[in-house]
Image (tube, rainbow, N blue to C red):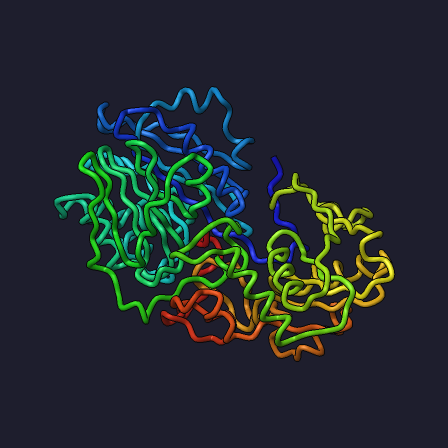
Length: 478
């Protein structure tokens, strides 16, 4: 299989998706994890995996299967049928270029002196090089290039001294810095943990006598589970036969919380709720705000699929300009596909999107998108609308301009690659070929998150944690 990034897909790339389940009745959970990952497929399309164990069986026996590609490419019905166990974790992954290999697929399974650990991680640590060096000095041998392995080692080492796995997770959390939502499987326990700032989401669900941990609430809906609550930033939850036990020793004041605002703008599915806030409503608010603060006379409001659609609806509601569909999206093109050669005539954008000529011909169009990173996609989409006969194309972006890189798991590149760095909005407008361009005002981000603490570092350089002195985003990022 050939796995390469779109060089022209200029949107931000998703985070990873994590999922865990413990069925107290002893039922096999592999197929449930599969459907949970299917619901989280939008968070990562490069690799996926499942690891299961039987809580009443031999302690060291973990069955796992992982590979490159989408869930329905990696797993067969026979694979799932053969994975017997009532506790398990699953992962679907997006990686940066250069680290898209089977070895880096998760969950990671560790056999160590105290037993076994299965771990799935979403996020990015900022002190990976230091921890990696510290572990290597004491004899650690690494099988991957991902920071999730660092976390697994830290937990395993702490467990030698600590009385329980959950205590070992708490001990590891004192040393790791950055963004992480973890789902950890031990022979008799399922543990979920979220970094103290709450960068990445994690929630708890229940179905009958089974407890579930998932990145987004939509995964609970898919498997017919009820939403119980979100795991709090800094909280460690331990699920055993006795129920749920909580450790909040790593929690910090709510004023310091720093959720990634792009969960609401782009990453999460619109039917998800994150920390009690509807992603759908957040995107409507963004669209309404764009219409209030950056109005323009036009005939039609359209969204760039998928994340631009809801913001476009919000813009249309507020402005009174009709909302319409201008793009047909090929749903079968994932993040990984065989790129057209530069010598060929096929455009990677056209492979993914096509314009409905009848919808836009002769019209003044407002095009809503979630972000502009390098600008390489925006100019092509604007050009496609013009070729289809649009009289005017006004671009509105449902996030502020990117001025700084991200160190917490979102693949915002270095400043010199950001189109907004050292350029005015008018200059960017000319580069992408639009008639006008406007971004969401930064103040609106807090309205979108209903006042919850958010990270805005990529817009204003104010990070909740001091960024690393060296760029650690490369191979170590999920």
